[in-house]
Length: 384
Image 1 (cartoon, rainbow, N blue to C red):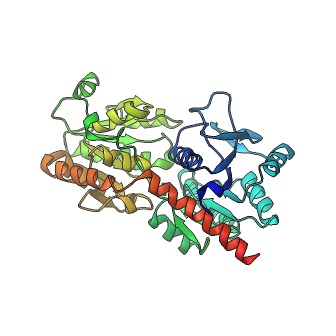
Image 2: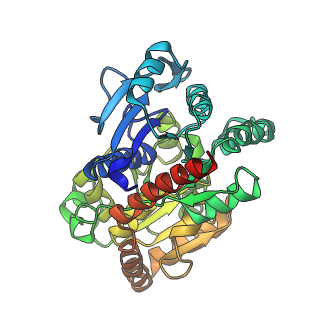
Image 3: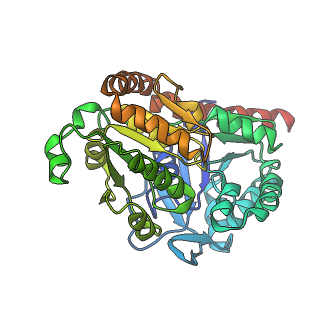
């Protein structure tokens, strides 16, 4: 079997409603599979005005808005309409990408038909509760996830560091790697635009620290703000540019009143904003890969990041940036200060980050997922 023999049913909790690293990767994967002759059918909640057009055929799954986060929707049920469409499509492998109820029902549907089930894991769901004073729920969520993941034929993780976490949590014993690529024709140092900086009132010689991501607490907004506070107390000259929007935006602006909040940016506008900064700061511990970190590196920015899943697999400590113990405000501030005050160090680590980013090629990365599909189908056929 080759890629053209694949018939993949993909279940996603958010395929194109809102932009995030996971659904951008899923759409790119589907595009690659279709280009190689595979048949793909995507099942996901839909909205009237999604953030972007979906790649491939998308079937709407019954859903409802998440309370207090209406930009996201919860898949509700594996309806008869969805089941009939799935049966007519006749997949030879199931790919689920979120642990919601519909994905669980779809996986059970596949198991009854002796079809292999692959599950890509895109975020550390269990860690989110720490940011809403619900950390006591974390062991329950881990057990709930394990029940699903152990029933899948294989998990697919976006980084080796996260795969190791999954192994330690005994989620599954077949865990492949589906890392991420970067569009180097979009994200590169030539996007740096001094006139854009000046339009935001930033002096040419002022070091700029960038934040990029959805403005939600689980991205480590509190840690970011606390580290910037330390720089200010130390009287370290710098500016902060915040790229993104989200429900915690007002809180973040109140904590960083001097920062430049440039809002959501996409494509070349995002690349320009990133490349026009000087240092990328990512304190989050919830990412399983960190697409934003890779995009910043492709723009030639050194990185200060939490030593956590995702970043630990991308950033080479003291070569392309610095990895810091999660939550260490002083540690983050120390390394940000080094970069702000030493432009030669900033330049050498930025050049190394750019070189490292060139190792991430999308086609080879997506082919690895296709190879996993083919392997699982063959294994299932051998077992009868």
